[in-house]
Length: 193
Ligand SMILES: [Zn+2]
Image 1 (cartoon, rainbow, N blue to C red):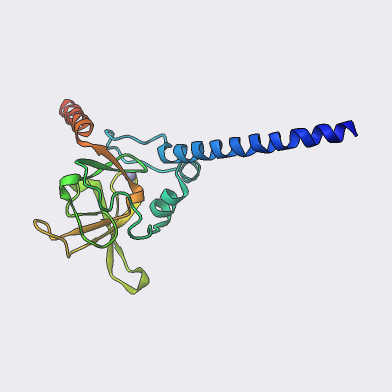
Image 2 (tube, rainbow, N blue to C red):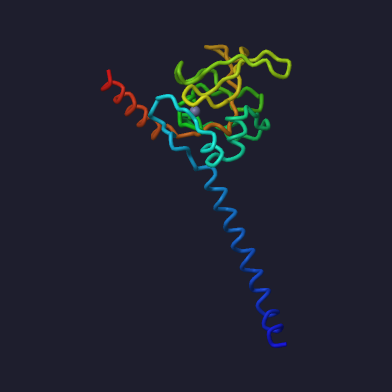
């Protein structure tokens, strides 16, 4: 009898605490997913990376893994980078390889972040893609071979190309900090030469 009364008194308190801590954990998890990086992640090391699928599965957010490793496509108009206008550099979200500068980004109206030129020749790998009855050119990260999107020849001058990229596989860094790292990389390669 006493025990029952006691439990009835405690139960609502327990429930409140339980739901409180659950919502706390949820917020924490989401934050961790977007910042977790693989051990080879680097914005300055240009050496090729051989990816370990187990590490990727454990580390990457499911939507990043789906696009980067399973050649998936994010839903159009869902990327925060689609109408993004900040000045800076876009990196591969899997390995940190510099891919595009914001001054080569343009509004294509196709629903995905679009660029007309990659940072360097080695930034990107090109592969023929004949899936879905179309002849397209797939673009992958030049450092880790993650799937990024496709390139089409209906872009603006000077290249006439449209790199149609899934925003979920892009990391962005604002100009000032990015520029500094860039100079450091340039100095490093000078030393090697
Ligand atoms: Zn990469």
